Length: 143
View (cartoon, rainbow, N blue to C red):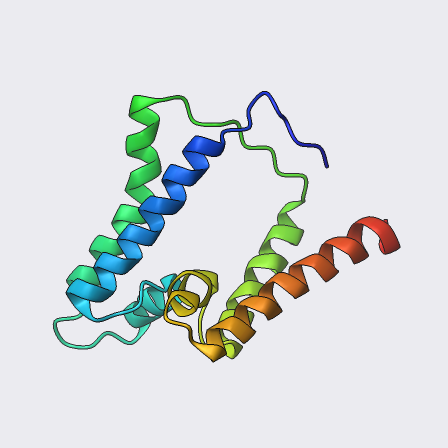
């Protein structure tokens, strides 16, 4: 893996991180809920009365924001070096992991750490450690 230094955009990354933090903070302040994507999506599978509109709106914003950005600027090229089977297996493992971990990286990593939640700190350390270990094994051991 190499870094394309010509396309490195630290100011855009900082702006994106600030927007994610601001959005998560406003979401918890205005709704009293954590902006964890797996919990928001999971709530659609077992909907509570009066609980669908904001969940659909949130998820529509996740899909619509990159589309809106694409109208204003060129979207970066996407290059995935994995087959369809690998992507499907990866998605299923992430889904199982978020279920066992009681949340996803957005809920634990962004919102939980901001609240100094020990459970979220442990979960985020586990996510990151598992990612490091997986990349190391796949790239350096299995090859």
